[in-house]
Image 1 (cartoon, helix red, strand yellow):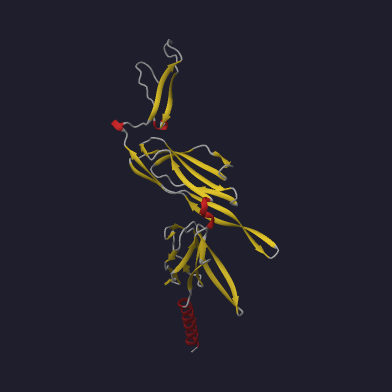
Image 2 (image 1 turned 90 degrees about the horizontal axis):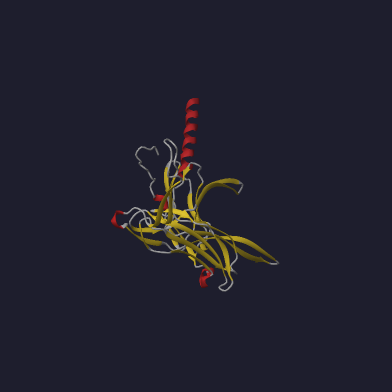
Length: 306
């Protein structure tokens, strides 16, 4: 009888644990249901069971997840301790978006969240060209290895309160890339803009239409809030993106491998020597083009070791 009672107790405990797992709750919610275009949006998926496997989310709609992390929240309700395990996904939507249902495994069982809707409103500061961010190229048609200068231009009105800004360049797939010297930031009094530029020298490596994705700017904007007799300042994070570009790339004519205009010259430091006495021969290349792709010179001279 003692063993029977012990087994019964264990069975009751097992049933209780299974019941708790079956009743585990999952939930998806937004930190804010309405945001301004380009601001951070946060999707929270939470479970009250620590044995949870959160979904892997790289994108929500067309918007990339830029940051994700997990944390644990502890609350006390009616004297009871409640623990929640939360994963947060951060993205920057430009337009209103429907967020789908996501599946996650809790205690070995699949559960689903409910779909959500995020309302994204136009930012008043985007109007009247208060902030401009664009990508321009000095040419949109080029040969393989023909240099192309691509410039990212970010400017904002002097009265727009920006605390900081960071630039995230695209990958430039299909191009050999060299970052050019930074242009000092300028203030144009006539137009009322502060101007920033980042420049790259690109050499297309393939023929066809090569696509350059948009660049991204992460901006900290100073926001002021008034509460009775005090004014508080906070930083509102905003992400904007430039336009994208397509470059039409053609093959070089007649099987050429180098593009540019070059002059070559060779000079020896002496014209008469004794046997086994060294001669220094210097080759000089002057010009503009993909000079880094010029192959190493190999001299084959009879009766001499190079």
